[in-house]
Length: 125
Image (cartoon, rainbow, N blue to C red):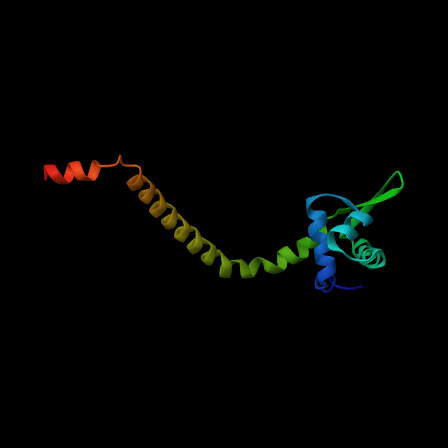
């Protein structure tokens, strides 16, 4: 049996998982959205189903697939020690965006002064 990492290493499988993360989909919907031939979609869904990443239900004549997130917990657990590397960067990005937002707000306030307000102030000084 393939490891979780071997399964998600395949780009088409990751694309299918991404689609299923938002909602359940039929094979036809997946094939249209990803522009993949039906046999390719079915092959990848079989691998994902056998590995426990997806499950299917029958709805009339369609088979609907939905994500089962439990196998992804292995990936989450593996990533835990690496979070400190991006955590500091995300914090730095947040501070930078806050400074940009403050600068934009200051510029907007300066633009909202009525016309001639600066001239009247300059005359009185």
